Amino acid sequence: MRRAILLKKMSSPCIITLDLEGVLSPEIWISVAEKTKIHELRLTTRDIADYDKLMSHRLKILSLHNLKLSEIQSVIAEMPLLDGARNFLDELRSICQVVILSDTFVEFAQPIMKNLGYPTLFCHNLEVKDDRITGYKLRQQNQKQAAVEAFKNLNFRVFSAGDSYNDISMLKAANVGCLFRATEKLKAEFPQFKAVEEYDDLIVRVKEFSLL
Image (cartoon, rainbow, N blue to C red; front, side, top):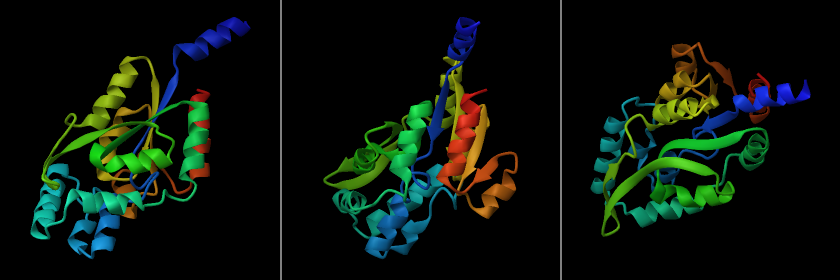
């Protein structure tokens, strides 16, 4: 009987996919906006659902203000994690495999990954010339949704959590999706997802999911 139970559990392992900014770290562009006083950079995927439109806006502002990649990286290097994020992630990883699915960029993420203990991160790349951001290259269109669907095809049950419009396709693709510290507007638009505000509550939901 014990062997049968173990085989049943092993047949459908779970994996957790998380957004990065707003879930584990502050929003990079908001931090840059506050440091540089360029308030037009405060817009994020919480505000604009169309990622290409949002990035076009950001690139235009960077060019207008002659803001270099190294200057942005200096801001990111000083960013703290959200309070309790490292302990939360460590506990999650003791329950299930964890993959961070983010629409940030490799050129931004290194200091944050170091502070988090180098978890697995799937994100995108910037196009850079002479320390200036000239464009960006998506790893894949709808990469969050595509990653979740790939994990499910590998026989994982997937629990996903995020806080922004660009996380919704990931939450929809998962076996269970959860909003974390999302805006009231987003929660009202997508009432099908449970919404939590604290890491402890998210841990409870993950533990429940891992036992299914």
